[in-house]
Image 1 (cartoon, rainbow, N blue to C red):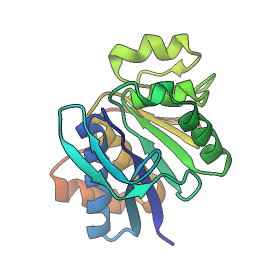
Image 2 (image 1 turned 135 degrees about the vertical axis):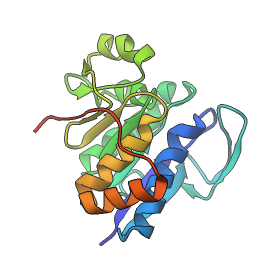
Image 3 (image 1 turned 180 degrees about the horizontal axis):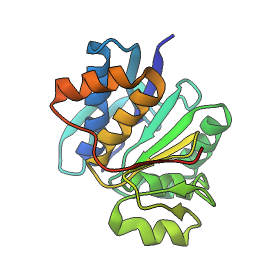
Length: 193
């Protein structure tokens, strides 16, 4: 059975936060993994305007429990103030979905209450805010706490995706992706268990 990955995109999303992981999962297929990656919007299919003005057509609406891994990239604060998104994040995690945040996308997870009293990380400029909201901030590029995986700044989404490929598909697939991308995982991955 393939690893089903959804990446939640929205107006104001930072381009690299979602494109980096999308590339990793796409290359994982070429390296022999069974991965299905889908871009989703919180409400309905349609176009989003990213942080730097890139327009992306998103073909699917988000169904929170219809995936194995959900990635929430950072960008604008639109989702931080959206109680429907927060409820759906909680519902997804309760249904067994691994919820992952990249950069300030972790603050969306925090707003939903998913990081409270749990090891996590985010962009270095947002770490104090994450800690003030109850997250146990760890100095690492990627923090894996089982059903919650978080990553630091913008390019760390690539490392988060490579780590998830390592964790779910094996290190040989991850090494194949690194070779295809001519990229080596950076920084530390901290695991809770």
